[in-house]
Image (cartoon, rainbow, N blue to C red; front, side, top):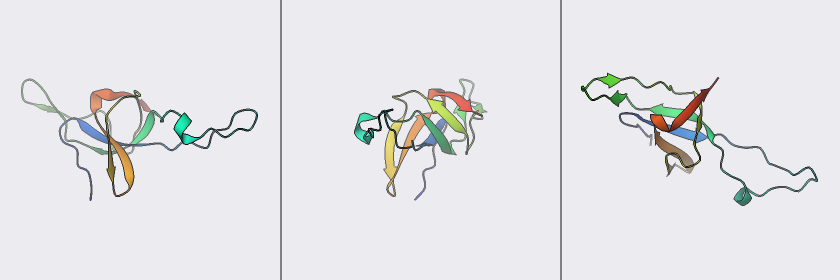
Length: 96
């Protein structure tokens, strides 16, 4: 099954973080870490509908690495993978 977002929505997969250790060698468990705020765009909608009815193409494309705020989007699980579905305006920046 695939997710096909509509309008100005995008599907983002969070980037996996490497295992984190403190300087003294203590491994920080996943439950104590914040979720990464960087992800890869997996799918994009066809564009934002403007007030005059025109559709503006999205600024992000499939494959872009994006930075988003901590509480952006709605988390969904599909085929055992977790994704975020969010509006394009929740993206803070494209990482080049």
